[in-house]
Length: 459
Image 1 (cartoon, rainbow, N blue to C red):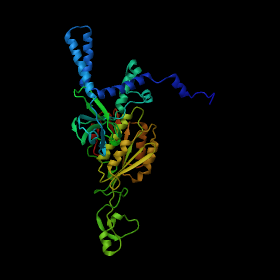
Image 2: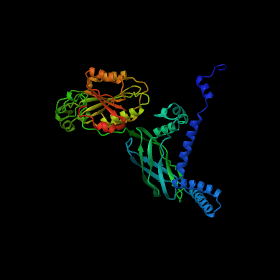
Image 3: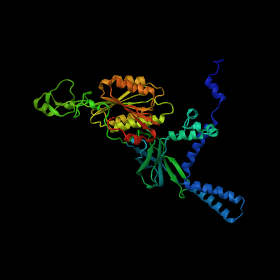
Image 4: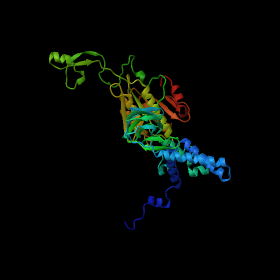
């Protein structure tokens, strides 16, 4: 409307135009990616040599210098000319595994179909990760660890911050196949890469690299392939033999007073069918012989139920501790014998979440998939987490808490759980170990695997 004053943020952006430092880093990174994907190492070496020989020829009239300069120019021009004849038209389908694990190499297969009449020779497939460049707001508001200790020049131009953000956002390393000598009509090629982070990994940029006969340059052609999604599970660590808190509540032999998980015990007899009985329990042969429905009676089997509480409220700058905490929780999910117990994973992620796995409920992979996508919460709300545990307290034999850092509020939460009669133990991921506390096991982020292997048998 006329006369309406401009909004404060609009005025601010007029006074302070787009950050020239960010624009320079963003465009130079894109140009470097484009260049390195099309110029091979020998080509880069020849480009450096041509600059050196040109400088030498400027002040030296000797014939060998001009001959070297001419030879290098001829090789580069020949490579560029031969590159014009390298073409490909391909269709591909990725055959991905169900899961991958952060930090561990994985190999999958790509089925290629050559749409050209001629066989394709000497090529390589390359899976390109999503663009790791941060947006301008993220670049402006982020702070590299230890950035305050750098000099004024480095803090002003924030080059190390840019590299840190790009490295942090890069989803996987590798993504290349071996060099393929020849492809006829169809073929299957393996691609190896190492996911760097947990979460959902979207793959939608598959390229074929076609080098020239001299190996100086290569053509980069996009392959027609449907996009695919891959679930990357959190990194896990080996654990020693241990007993979860609350195991002492159960009698020898595995009988439990926790919630009943279903009639999955030994066969004890037959009885008449009653409304609500599961169809899988019907004894079909007896029904066919007697003419009336009969079901099998099974001995009720009980399993201990344990709570796994994940702290999703890391302090500002402790995102790395949160990722370590997720890895610790995933390690316990894998290590707990799901055949003899149930696990309730509890956390706050915008809302209260409880996911159960174990005998007769779901497989442990279900919890790992949930942990692969869990995100930290910007505002600490341990009271909501305490109320969530309280509602399920009667079903739990004990709780294992995994904290990202240590604070008084977390100590109060543990004290409150113990006061409620819930046997609780805590795994606390920290940078430096504080003084020892009862029922708390401090794990240094610098030696997480070593500290986990030193855990006592009785947590």
